[in-house]
Image (cartoon, rainbow, N blue to C red; front, side, top):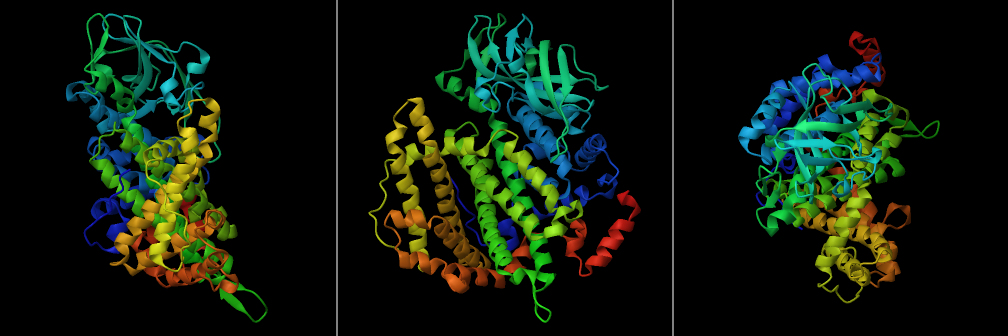
Length: 594
């Protein structure tokens, strides 16, 4: 897998940010427009409608097509929407990434233009319809069919389990939808999953002929107009087939692939924007983790906690707060740098290549689960202050859960990517077991490398066995390998920047020691650490190597938080104020809140 870092020397802020600073600042301004602020009196349906109005405003300010095809800009839109306008995330994903991105990259400009024109000014809102009741997000097994009728295509839902489950099309606004369906050609051959474009709702918001839309129930964590969609002879124009120039269909409706390689790339081509979307959602979850840490740590540094009638301390100095949040901070910065490297790679990569797809699967598994853990930790450490949307963090939980579960369990992707990775690494034997010194940064890197290669070797007996039980038995090893490999790569990237950024050097030390500490039993049983080394990593009385590394990271905390690029006024969280009671009074009395 490829995770090349930035080789040129950059500022800390540039290292942690991906893309143009001016565009990031523009997004902060646009997405904090008070005209679209969520109020206490809005119902869930009103919040949905508000999100659509905000989407149109965002499109008016930054456009659609240029952002959809400029990955740094696309990732920035996801990041700042997640931080400042959480209700937008489902709409951003469908409109900018899945629909506009697919139309802009998978068909010719003349065929795409009528649809892209409407998406460019949000006359229509873009959505992609892939998941179904029966196949879930394992979309290679979808059952919706597309057949040839002499002039174009006809889409049908052959049975109830083939209904499209959960795309956001409930609100009655004009829709341009990219739909996945199995193309059964005129010769009766199942040619696999292909993408087709249709106007699912007209300018009045009414469903197109042959389309039935049923809005789903209330969601407690995220505002989405999820629906169930079925098709009964939905007609689709011939030019609405997104072939990516891999095949042709003649006037008789028979499909011919350009060559064998094109046939093999067909499915990967159809889901290519899903690969981009996986990384975009991982990026925005990392953004919510950074924002949560910024808010929680800034609050913890000011919050005075009385311990006895005569003794008090700042909340950030309480061990369970300090150790948890600073370890989360190191993990988040490491994953930010790792994620930025994958973003840079993706911008010039073939989206249908296996290495590209697997690299993004690994990043999703490595980043998203940790982001949820970090946001949850921040929410808990902020206690009562963490309950309120005004302090942002509680709302980030919904974004995390929506992204993690929106296309199925992240563990599925992690296990698939880990299995592919195991096959690639199985020819590289692990080093002979020898004791390492966790005080030596070089030994730390060697420990992580040894863990990666050893897990790959341990998975070897099951890799060549096609039986179902073997495929199931290898999943735990595959997941361990995915995490171990990504941690190893993240540490390598941190090493690249540690010389120029002392803040990153402290992040590297905490990240590496935390990885070793979490897997200390594994290292012990594999003969890579002894008891004394494990004790040295984290001794009692906060005197171990990890505690010292956390202390060093704390010294650089202001610089790291500043490099995140957040604006206190734009975030508007009361806990960021120097006068917490006054901040809450001002918010409660603000007429715009009601």
